[in-house]
Image 1 (cartoon, rainbow, N blue to C red):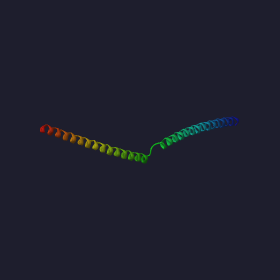
Image 2 (image 1 turned 30 degrees about the horizontal axis):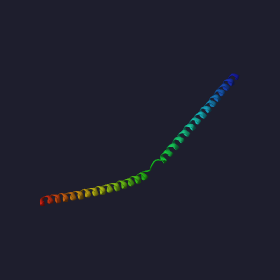
Image 3 (image 1 turned 90 degrees about the horizontal axis):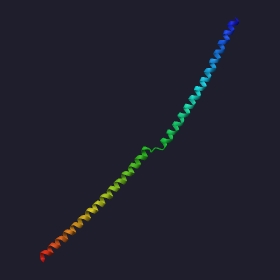
Image 4 (image 1 turned 90 degrees about the vertical axis):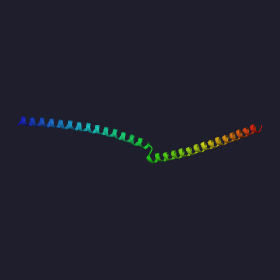
Length: 110
């Protein structure tokens, strides 16, 4: 009977040691999971901060519309200037033609 009691005590001791080892392993796993989740939360915060600095679709559309208006305005101004330059060139050409005609007429009359 004494041998059975000793054998049972040894089994209980080994079982307690296994339970203690399992508790330690569980604590290590819990700490590891906590550290991992903390790192993931930090990463999520960084992504959230980064996303907060991105331009939104609405803001981008407003900027595009504004740029298109400026381009249209610049194109119109350029076309007006080009039209004025063409008119000036035409007036100079007419004036030169009139002068050439007058010079020709003067030579014919002399």
